[in-house]
Length: 233
Picture 1 (tube, rainbow, N blue to C red):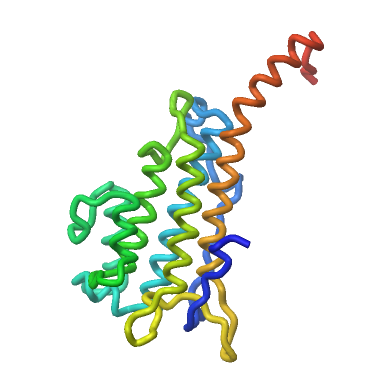
Picture 2 (cartoon, rainbow, N blue to C red):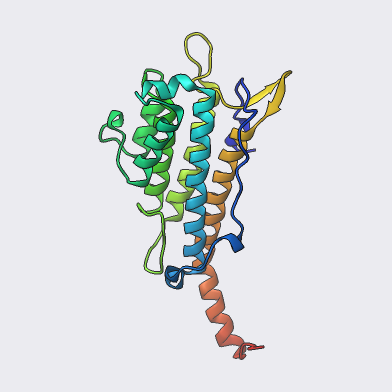
């Protein structure tokens, strides 16, 4: 069982709107897809889906922990969300994080002494870590390369972050961030599922990256060995 599967704290998530996942038919063809291999396309879609998952978690965490967005100086829940989304989409570091990047941000966000908006720091840190692990990009084309080890490490970092959020509490014994609920009042593990989907997408991409070069060699060997024409109808 992955560490993401043990993300359990007290609270509840009832009343949140359901999020729909686009189907292939919902995604129109764009000219830039011509410059993408199957792996490039999968990596691009996975990155978009993982960032969307972080935005879902951003909203969920703020709803469960309103004290956090108030620390940022935002005037509303929605304004706090937009602040973090804009920072991620425009690669603009949040001022309170200084010049820190990727795992440096996560280390700060998950430090007991941190007194700032922990939700913003965690979500921005995870997003920055994901983008860094993918070579600093969110879209991928034929000339782009990705390091499978870095992508795998990103998946493991998510599991570590989830474990820390699950197990660490303040001096009063309260969790840093309230998320899932498993209690007599209800059972809701939507946070765990969202984090788990992110880890699953990253691990699938790692498998494809590792397989890509092996399959290229095997396919070339097949073409030489069997000397067969390929069907056209």
